[in-house]
Length: 456
Image (cartoon, rainbow, N blue to C red; front, side, top):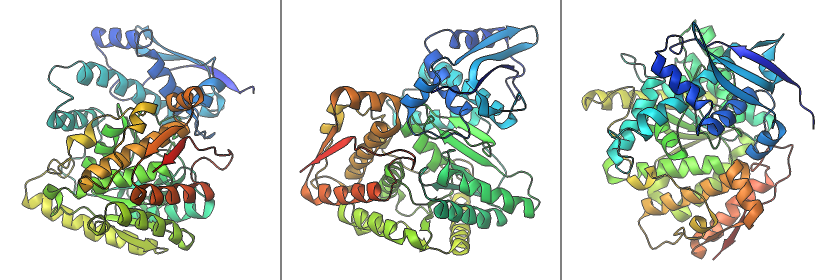
């Protein structure tokens, strides 16, 4: 299938404008060395704006002739693009938001490799050091807003949702924007774009010109969730676990819209953390919401949580159906409790240092056929540990659905196998079957073949 492509040479804006010779040398090494495949794939995902795919392998194959490199000039650096997707340009000029995202990719890949992965200051087997690393990545991306009251609402939900659900996410975002709330999402389409678009209108009506639309992604998922241009602050975290930690450390509330396995993964991560004894008394507003047609979806999610994690987990969220204004008011009231708690305990408004995250939630899980089959999906363990393993199971299904490495593994070795107790596998089977029936596994333009097999 032929694609419309363009060549271009673009200059940075922001703090990549002024660089030392050593920094330029590192950037040149990135565009030629071991980091190049990562840099290229993330850059291609950013450039693929407007034509959403949820198949990382297909994207790389579709634009196999795409190339990007850093070139040095007397006034700094530029990016040289060969055969870039044409929809990133208007009248031959790259859309400014996409250009910003492209240099954000370069910034984060360089910073993580240079200042985190190879820095002896960070022991990434240590929980505290991981939390510090997440903080430094976010600070380097300049997304922290000190001396600002809490107002960042994390919105989770599917990239593959019907239009009426997308419209509902926009209305919730609008109501949040009218009340001065900023939006943080996974930065892609669907329930990640809708709240930002709605909030932008709410901010405009309130003459709020400093609204933040924060997108947090990671290399494995960015092809499936290419950043939408409303995002005015993009951060590429090194893996899914640090991405999830960035959401809950930077955000002050979470609103969950209908989604698929990726959304279920996020829910289990959050509930597993909030169920820790150290976090029991910490205010952290969580709202599940959608239009009336999504009521059955949240009934399924709620039933699954009740059957696996129990009533204690169900008490950590509120379900609000078809009432966008009530969602915004509930979030606003909850964030005020967060502000009072942070002030009382001398915790930063811009980063939730007091939130306890067990190392099991931080340690990167690489979904392979072996690691998936060895997950402990039994009731004979602590609830938080079950949440860890369920989160990993959903993470593996996401990888098999949309990530390049996961798709190739399924093609080579067959389906992932998940084994566990009937009390877990039966509700899991019902939940996943519901996602498939509702078309929540893949974009509506593609048919879905399961990448997993359940056994009890």
